[in-house]
Image (cartoon, rainbow, N blue to C red; front, side):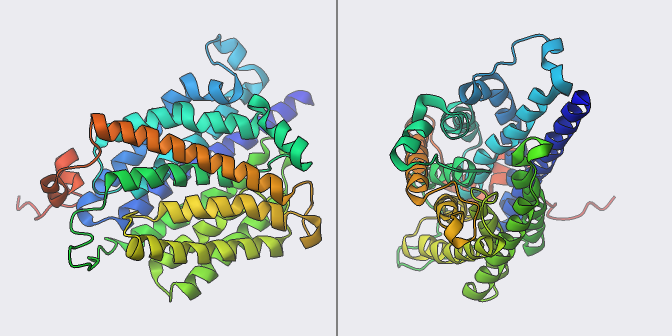
Length: 400
């Protein structure tokens, strides 16, 4: 019976890992559809290569930073318990690799290829797992300190803060230090329109992310006996709440409509195991509204050229998710309790501060040493031709 449980748990978390792996295709197509046509190939290549670098770095370094576990042992030891520890690594790797995938959307179209891979290695090898270990593995006694001060630990079930806010707030200094795309903000104050190259591909990316997200949230239970249908329905309600809010505030803009559900899902991760479905609906709706408002402000008023809006989507909505868990997870609003707002604020602030510091240091050093941005001529030609020497579609069909 024990062997059956071990096998079932390994399969459960493996299926979660596969679903979150599929989300990386969603990141790729979301970026492909949002960028201009001359940067579509670059979007696809970046996501796949970033994932590959993340895998190696997280396997060798990052996982041991977060959990103190090393894979430098024999295969016989690794295969124990149906290889559960290995598939748990696979599942958590897909979370870690989401950080560079998030950042990729913010710096799209004008970032150099190799410096970004170096940033990916440092982020997934140290910056992300350091905070992951604090939040999810009791490292450095931070959770114990928060509990001693507030009465409860910081609660982030599936990574609103640990994954999404981390990615979004690392991306913010990256985007600012990189600078806007050439001619995006003209000297006369006019904002040049850079419309998405393909709404169908943007929508495809969004849908892949939505479906995979149920693995991201539900399988965060990590064992079959802890699986809860509440997490699934809360994810669903937050997704539709974000969609409807973005539809209304975004005035039926398809870009906002397809990012709204992602905003809702980002926000519900932290408290998806605690909230009442109506609470999840409200949290998702607030996130959808926040995304539309903050995306518009960053692009038009503050002139921060965050191409996919990853800081509003993951940074702001992720931080809101950490706070929302403390509001809607409370028993007074129909939640399961065991969480409080002060603890959530402390944990969220800690995560955001660490991400900002890491982003400023990594991208600041890279800007000084290797440079971050393509030249004006390279950007004009497009990242596809400048970096990969090929375009997404040929200029003309061959005649033979």
